[in-house]
Length: 97
Image 1 (spheres, rainbow, N blue to C red):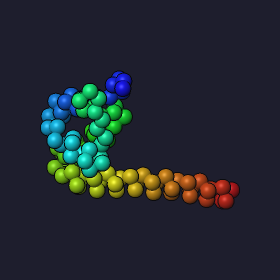
Image 2 (cartoon, rainbow, N blue to C red; image 1 turned 135 degrees about the horizontal axis):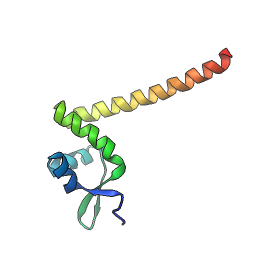
Image 3 (tube, rainbow, N blue to C red; image 1 turned 135 degrees about the vertical axis):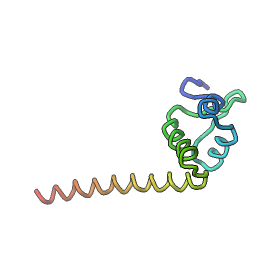
């Protein structure tokens, strides 16, 4: 597998000053996806945005992993509701004109 679009997990650990166990727990809870290539753990580059949010919640707000899971689920629901609201508004505008 080509690891061009992946970041080694130990690089993330050094950058964020966190232990590998933190990321493994995130993986076990389904918050990130860790892939193994030649016995090395990697995270896809596309998940960096989510990892940034998770690390900030954990370090700055001192939210535990279960709390982070709840917050991320609520944020996803808010995004879905905002998208649905936008669609309804657009449909309403069609009927008003």
